Length: 274
Length: 294
Image (tube, rainbow over all chains, first blue to last red; front, side, top):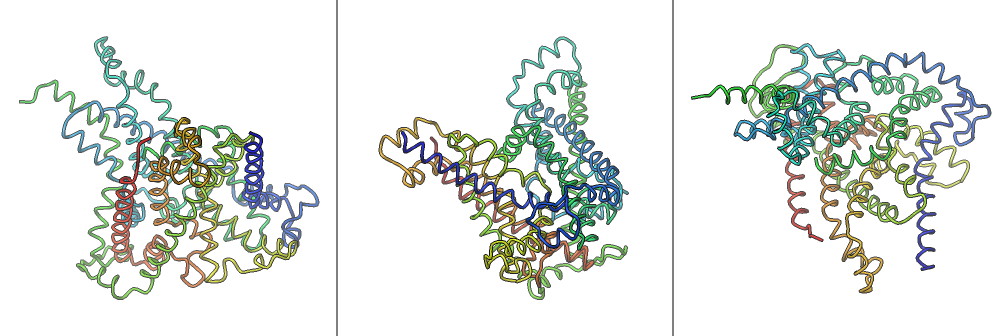
């Protein structure tokens, strides 16, 4: 027994050392975001001589952070609301209707999961231009609805199959309309899978770069785009760029700290079932 | 004869499923179908003038393209090493972290954190580490490898991109394997130990075969993600130095949005989707056939 315990302690120490090395890059970023330019250039690994938030104050204004935060939040929240609503509604009726049409529609819904985004992004831009969706946050959101729905339909579909039909039957007999049955009976039951869908999409949409890059056409409208342009613009002024890194990363990190277990479980569950 | 009841049911189906079907069709399937047509055209993305050229784009792609095959080669090489390194590292971490450690939960979270940070930021953070961080660390430690030009030399840039990719993704795959390990029944582990199977022997004879379902999922995801690699390269090296880290996705992106050869880029993307589909389908078939039941 003692040998086993000793082994456990060795494993733990080794893993702790690896973990420290693992987060060291982030630590360096935070430390240096609090230093003035000269200190960053002379010694990266030293702690700041004085803890100052001057860089943050500057970057907050240079980036127009509150506006970008608002924009990104808008895109993320509205996209996810749509993905959850449209995805769950479609999945529900597609499970409960048994016909060739519902099989076909289900296939149309999940087929894009096999298509890499790069294989249709160029023509998606052409189509977006024709539909006047370019250079606008609502336009971007509209495309996120379409791109997010396949996985959502797939995950909801799998879950609804396990909900017993009797539940809805008695509601229908009581005179409940199909719409009310869905929103007041089925939707609340689906909480666990809804959580998975929300988490997967928050992580994807908040951090997404390629779609905003090609749809917003150089406009600094989301945090990721602005951060990227900021890095280019302040290439040599590391202290600003690093503060921008922290400001961009803070929202998802806070979200992660609050819902850590759910996020790790949700992201893996989404992957395993997808 | 269509009764009013079945008409009502059809209407309900369309009200519930219609929006999602329409949205998905517009955002993914319609552009994909358009891609098939545009891959056979000459089109610069701006002018209304689009000429149909048949299979000429594909002929050029296979006979007269200076970046496609190098990008393909890079993508394959990157995928090969990335899939192996990520999965080996993830399994090792998972084996350690599924033991009864005091700090297991904190450690899991630490290894997972790079997954919640955007790849744009990850790329920049490592640019900072590779340019200023390594210099300071070299001055402090005197270790020669820290002085190397990690992003500037053709030989090292590949390893740097690979290292950052593994560092970024390993925590996610670790969680897949931890989930898989926790579903292996305790009595099987105990029986194996009673029969004298320990260490490597137990891992290869018992754990690994039972971990096959997780392995299939993790291999599929890491393979698909590696073949599509874009953001991390875009921000870390933008394909450089010289086109040495140019991936297929980046090649398609530059062909369209930098060189303005939209029609030709679409042809590349069609070849790309075929490559990805063939490789992933073969891989899933292969691994599915190896799964065993506990």
